Amino acid sequence: MSWVPQPTAPPREWPMSDRTDDPTTSDEYLQFIAGAILDTAKRAPPPNTATSPLDSAHEFHSLASNAPSTQTYKWRVYAISDLHADMKQNMRWVESLPKYPPRSALIVAGDVATAVSVCRKVFETLKQKFEEVFWCFGNHELWLPASPNDATKIGYPDDSLGKLKALIDVCCEIGIRIAPTVLPGTSGVATKDLEKSESGKSESGSQRKSSADVLIVPILGWYDDNFGDSYREYTPEERDFDAGCKWPGEIGVVGEPRNSHAAGIGNLFQSVNRFIFSSKVFENLFASNSDTPVVTYSHFVPLRSVYRGTTRLSRVMGSDRIGELAFKLGSNAHVFGHSHVNADDYASDPQSEKRKTVRFVQNALGYPNERWLGNGQPKLVWPGEDDASQHNPCASS
Image 1 (cartoon, rainbow, N blue to C red):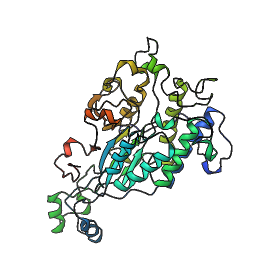
Image 2: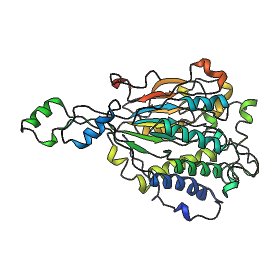
Image 3: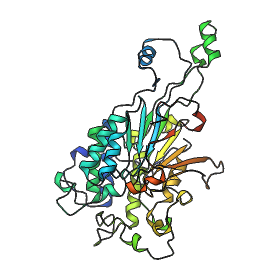
């Protein structure tokens, strides 16, 4: 990671479990969402360390033996987005997934479903298939019908942020990761160093440095008008896009709760990112993993250069601010969704002299009538192509 987030002001910590009143200001909504994410991260147990997925006895042997291993073991991180499991055919797809080997993680880049109950069922099912599951919200998760609804039934505000809080509660309960997390690998020892160690001529410090860990970082956001052709009027498809969402006046447009084009929506989630990254919960995580490979993910398209969809929807597709943050975080690969047009592209940061190239991947399941695009299986995004020689026990799944 080339960039350690710095707060614009000393970060505050809020005890979310003590809150009894609804948020009424933009700061309180920031507290409401960021505090819930941090609370979920604090409650989550640390991930297991990667060992061989091929021999269940190996893990016990490795833990029981003091002999150093020459093999480097890494987590395998897969990606999918836009499950839309409210549709029965898509839910059957989720249920039909095979159980992946130990130390397999899945990034779900938004649009799991609209109903909280369906999201819960998907999360529970995916946790049976993958040891770790990461999620960020998409636009469909935030659609909210008139009260009573998934937010008001449990006493949260009657808006999309109240519903998001309800979804965060579900993630906390089931063990879905929604905050920066290191998946620890096992670094091997170079063969020549092993030989020296066995002969008593080498100290324990002879272990070869290996990037076996991977840091997974969600980037929250919303679409920005200037992502597309902002010089023109909205198309009919764009004008009422996400009218199913409902925003408080402090975040959206006063008197227009169903207007999802307000700049304040994206600004809020950018503030949530900054708050989380600079929080005391993660003050050591970024600094102590400066050499760790990073996989970031978002729901919305992170760069105009990797958008492959129609121009008639371009103003509601993404935000370059997401891509800029992925570059700043030193991302090796960024997973996204939303457009349902799959991509596996490379782009470099125009603001950086080093011009590091980052892989941008969309692997959307999408709607049943979109299967002709080849959608349909979680895609391996880490380890990358340089690790292609490693055996992939789920390559044919």
